[in-house]
Length: 311
Ligand SMILES: O=C(O)C(=O)Cc1ccccc1
Image (tube, rainbow, N blue to C red; front, side):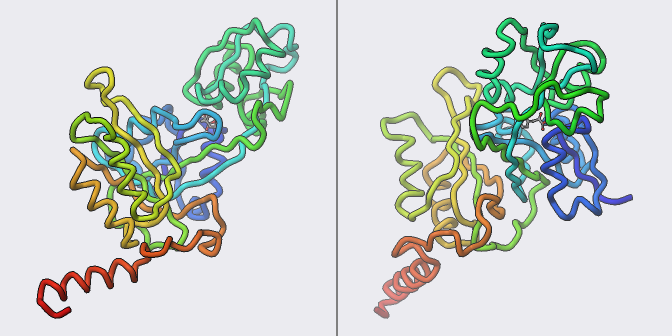
């Protein structure tokens, strides 16, 4: 049996479309799961080699179910990311007219991406959240809802027709998906990589978040995502999910993580993996002066010589 990848299903999700852009899926069995949690649990339990799930979109930010799963429980690691441009179709059972639509459904992350369209075209329709956009299409097929926002490609799979296509409130809306597996050595750096971590502050004090961010800033590291998530320990108690440029094998990134580990109550490393937003390492700005691997190595060498009295 080939190794399998779990993904947020059922068949016909944007997640499946994004997953199929990874070349190795040609030799993997792709297994749909009903939720992000169940796909990630399949990895934790050893049923699947990896899981592919949405993590962030350019309209609303982090997909909180995914972030919360990565923040807590048995540690997992991100190995790849994929960006997909998203535009929705309004899928209905054949023959349904716009005026007959009383209920609409989709994944919660779809709502902020179609809100204006809904207000202008179906102001009275009742929104019902589904486990995924394709699941909403499946529920329309079953007669539970009148319409679903999903990819146009899902229509045929669920015997539906697209009453409208190209629905998107924001131009160039993109969703980011990640391939998540059990912890192992990260892939070698490509020169255009990203590192994801979760940080828990040691204590609550003025400038606490600035102290954490300062660890990145002083090593010239740009951030790509900063999302706070409640720890569950009470109002005002948050951890921070951070994506930063670079790979853990870059000296400036390793040094930043060392600094964070010293000052945080806890740090969870979520992986170093190739960036999907740049084509090649040539598109990534060079490290700021004093933050290259050479600068870190020669400074460490100088300290060692000082310790030996050999400067
Ligand atoms: O993959 C899907 O179809 C999902 O339900 C997740 C999602 C939600 C909104 C935009 C892109 C992906």
